[in-house]
Length: 264
Image (cartoon, rainbow, N blue to C red; front, side, top):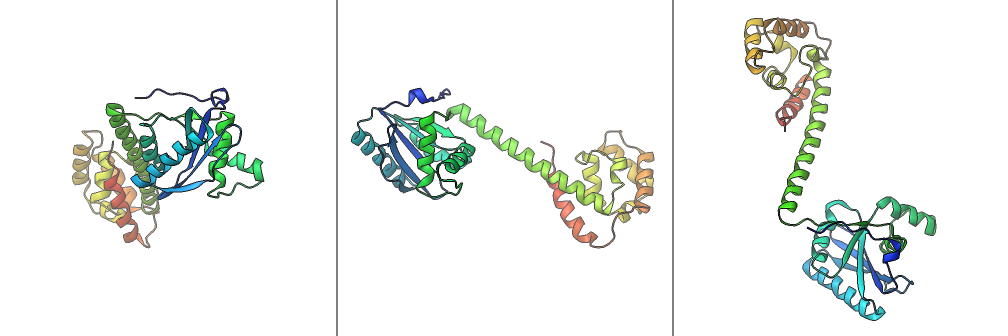
């Protein structure tokens, strides 16, 4: 795996070709320039093998035209959309860097008093930022490191989605049975999710005997909840201040959230 390298203004020399890309979903805009301002017109290339080869051909042609002996390629931090290009460039004699989108926005405002995006303007602005040395290295993991990073990213994404679903579930339960959390404070515990799935409304909870509900709660909670908790929950359900209109729609939504809120 490549180690992190931070580019500074001193390392962008007269003989360095600055290559920048405005990343897009289907196509990108490339630009080549030197430290002293010599450049070529921004050009478009597709996110395909043919498009990447065109991009590299333009880089090599610009390098020869301006007599450069090294290449720095940079782009805005754009999440996953830059990854295929970064993986392509990592096998080329290029130092890959990225710039902060906030720096790009501020630089555009300084240059022409406008933060608006244009195909030609963005790669030129990124080149200006690289000239100033305001860049960060791009680390492209390989092998086991890449595998572990993908797993970690997927886990973090799943946790975020789970938290969002749990928050929505709590809001829906509060609307129809706000007293539920008096007994079961942790909405994502097995006991709470079991009850919300099996007894979808306060009316259904209030119709169960405390012995039956107590035994179900005892089993799911490994003895934490017992008959007295079931009796309290039943009494709260009978006198709930939850709404009565549109409950069927809320229940349908809440059940889908409940089954999705599994613990990571």
